[in-house]
Amino acid sequence: MKKDEGPEYEIKYLGCYKDNSSRDMKHGPKKYGYKGVDGPKKCHDACKQYKYFALQNNGWCSCDNTYGTPASTYKKLSDAKCGSTQPRSGKGWTNAVYTKQLKSVTSKHSKPALISQGKPTSMSSRSPYAGQHMGLSSKAVDGNTNQNWGGKSCTHTKSMSNPWWKVDLQANYKVSNVKVWNRSDCCGSRLDPFQVFVGSHKCGGNHSIKQGQSKDVSCGNKEGSSVKIQVRKGTKKAPLTICEVKVYGSRA
Image (cartoon, rainbow, N blue to C red; front, side, top):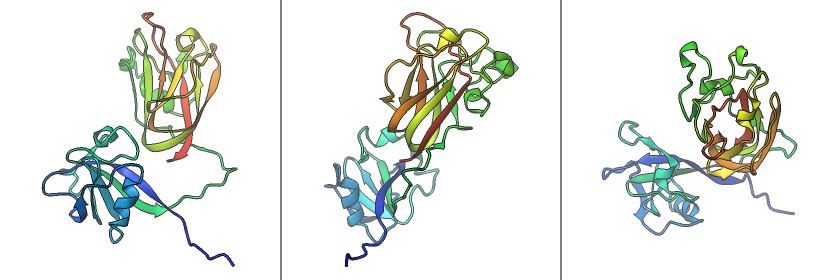
């Protein structure tokens, strides 16, 4: 009889946090040698009695039962502050914080969830119609797929070269697909063609879309914490107008 090995666990990255000489995490080996692909696991193995563990300055391991406390001192930073490659192993006075958790089990038949609606957004310029509460970047994740400008649910940048729009997913996700709605009453060429990025990962090439159409772009579970839509037409200037973006995926 096969031995029951119990539940599966995984190492989960929690974010990048500022540190100082007083040390946010005060326990563990507190030495180097924990970098590389197996760095987080090796640090965990040295910190099994603690809930959280961290890598700093390219592989210096420490651990504790709390992290980022107080938040005013040990502030959350952008992931880039803890390294550009994964798994992140921290930089000078920055902790790449991890924990061990039960591995999530997802049915192979389950559908990816909508992960973009209502999330923070930005775009390459302020809307020229912001005073009328029109053309705002947030309009693309308001859940309204009305493709008519008069419906007040489309974005609008200034006329510019290579305009873009972005949604902050507020966590790291595996993005399966991104669906984009183009304006229907006018100016459909502004979005045609467009590119989709999950973090720095590009989903395919240029995606054509006609006026009044919607386009579903596959991203193949690329990982990132943001999704960007960009139109690249060299020096040609035009506004970027998007009437809705729906990003689907699951937590990485």
